[in-house]
Amino acid sequence: MLIDLFLLPLEGYDIVLGTQWLRTLGVINWDFTQLRMNLQLQAKRVTLQGSSKPSNRFVSMACLEKITNKKPG
Image (tube, rainbow, N blue to C red; front, side, top):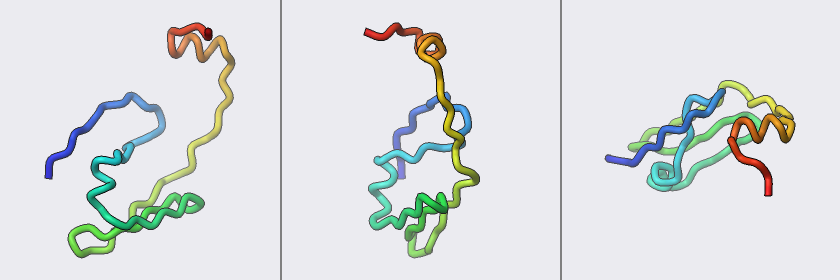
């Protein structure tokens, strides 16, 4: 199977699952409290387990502008 991939420089994440791949899986059972995803893949039950919850961080407007190189408005 061939799928398109997009490289995203995201800090703190190993992988982002895209809808192009996810829709090939059929029914998926998500448990966001346990960071767990259960699915059938080639007649096998597969569980993908997240390693930790991302930490929430507040960012000032000045920092956000610096990161995005954009001013609001």
